[in-house]
Length: 76
Image (tube, rainbow, N blue to C red):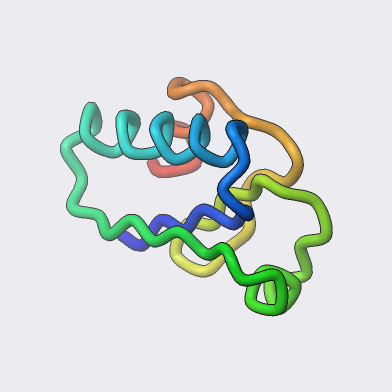
């Protein structure tokens, strides 16, 4: 599973990264976590507000930091 965090490195982006990693570890899934910080790469996903969570190429959340429980739903 490929999990991507879109954001410039702000505190919310860092929190989303930690939550996504914790959710994947708790679920026991094999995953690759990638942080995308370049604005032009973020826009390619159609995302204009960060942070954003992308799972296997699909944008799941934009502009907020979901809880670990919410992220688990996106990963299942």
